[in-house]
Length: 393
Image (cartoon, rainbow, N blue to C red; front, side, top):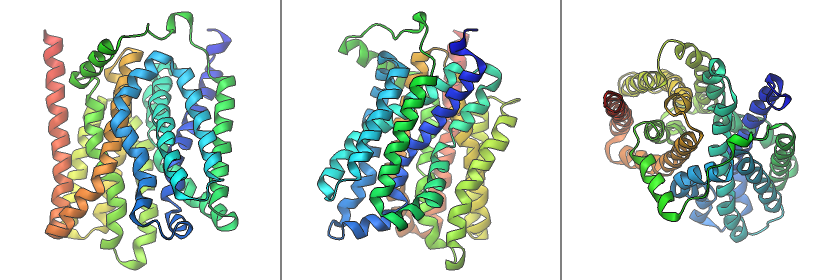
């Protein structure tokens, strides 16, 4: 093995890619966690402040699959480094913005940076990692969003309180820049045989997009991911109102950490004996049961069980991408579809569940959540049947 692809260099690259993922998640967390400070900074903005979060999700929901195809064409390494540099520049510029309009415009560009990172990084990780370690590192990658939010709350908020919101943006910008520079040194360059495929015509590109949507292998992780993201963030927003005041802050800290712990401790163990999709289905079944128990036993213990179950879905869904797809291009398309479905779920989840809670109360809320999970199980079963038929043919 060449020094470019030595075990130490691969391990360092995987770690840096995960740290870069924290930066990508930070593009959400730096707005979502200190949102009350942003409201104080722009007191007359009203509902338009919500666009600071939703614009990045909207870019992912619209262009996720396009990014999957684009990243595979321009090269994973090149796309990753460019996205980190773009994110660094945007965040540093945001630290100097005193009005809302340019900040909103910058979030559109930041959405492009975010999307390229969350497509390129897991594809690179799966490509570089030996098979015996792949399930673990893909599970590690899946924790990037929860870890970034926890770190922003733990370390970022004291920075904001001491030095103001621009300080958080500056820190994030320099963090992204550091990740880019370190990856430029450490991340192995592709072999000559690993060069991106030749450029496609627009017609061929659109045909590849349609093939990915119709593929039971490429689409499967993303289809399940949609139902996960419909509830993960939205329940963190809605559940506090259903909990005793004295327990709200503690529960909102505990729930994401429970999911991360389950993901890191249980998923690699389960993947030794079960296919990734089976672990995902088991997670959805357990989550549906926990959601139903909220109606009968109150929300506290079932909510902890629910987020533990979501941790199973989180890790196994990312592990399913390389498990189901052999080629680099198919993996990039699968990660692009996961990004698209994840952003779509984040956009739609909170409004949908708030409507159900308002119209049908806690019963309507838990029925909707459990229903999403049951649909996910059925969708995965249908896609698995299609894959078996393809093998039989």
